[in-house]
Structures are given as C-alpha cells and as structure tokens.
Image 1 (tube, rainbow, N blue to C red):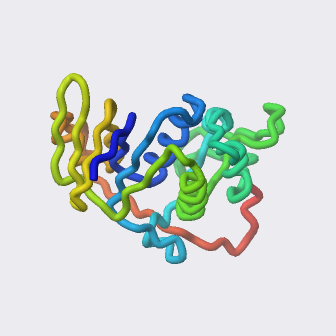
Image 2 (cartoon, rainbow, N blue to C red):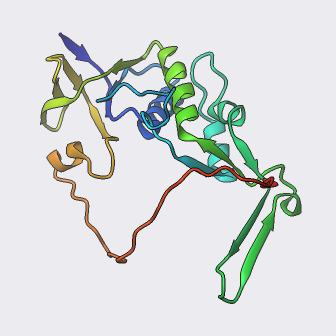
Length: 209
C-alpha cells in the first residue's frame, strides 16, 4: 500500500512526537504527517519506553505553549499536569570556589522550569497524537529502503508499505541510520575519558522544588 504524506518522521519517541505535533499545529493541522516507530512502547514498565526524567526550562515551556494540537489544549498545559515545578536552582562544585543560586520568586516567576518523567510524557503524547486525524503512526515498523531526489523521498517499510513525502525527518537517535543514509555524519568532537551514571532515586527528605 502506498501513502502520500507531506512529512515523514522516522522515530516516534518524545523528539519525533513533539515535532509532529508542532508541525501540525503550525500549519493549522492541514498537512499529513507520518511517524515510523520501530518498537511499541511499554509505559507500564518505564524501561520499555525511557526511564529518565528531563528538565524543561521556562523558555522551553513558553515554546511548548504555542503547540496546540487539535482539540487538545497545548503541550505546556499537558506537561504541567504531570510534572514538578523547579522553584529554585543551586549550582556548585564541592571543594571548588563559587556557587550560584537562582530563585523563581526573585525573577517574579512562578517557576524556573519543570521536571517530567519521559515515560509519563510519552504516554500523554501518544494519546494526543492518536487523536490527530492528520498524523498517522506506523508501529512497529522500520525503514527498509530509502530513495530520494530533489522532489520527494520514497520510503519502503519492513511491512512493505510505501510512503512518499517532500520532507523526511531523522528522529531515530544520535546514531541515526536515516541520517547516515542521507550522508549526515555524527562526529565525536572530544572524548573526555569519563563515564556517567544515570539513575532514578527516591529522596528521604523533601526536595523543596
């Protein structure tokens, strides 16, 4: 089966989902958008989607407020319902000189940003996208073949469905296979010879935002 789209996003996690909703909102929901996602997310077990949390700045929240999916309010309100506000920020490095403290109240703001669990955000975005008649999801599915010229991209999926679009978005991660096929390379600029541990922790005392 062949589908004619305006935009195809390969990757349907938070980046691909928010971009699809933003493009749909900016064009008054008049363009057809396809999202190709390789795995069905498991929101009940966070590891099946993404167990991390992210911090969104005040400026990012203002941009999300402008994204208004059809009959769904805006993304800022959606995040507000599942996130925790950041009211103060403390930046310091133990045994080193200097520190910075910022309070929302000093800037006459209610918050400096929000912290949100990606699994909760992903589940909300999925429900929002499902309600958009101009956004279609192909999941689970992957790109098997990609052809492109100056006029359009022709994509054959593993399911043998074919998509045609004027714009192809590579939202399939930092090691993007789509970007590589299009000649876009990822270059490691500097190796710091360090490793990082990402963990979810439960606090004994209140964090006071």
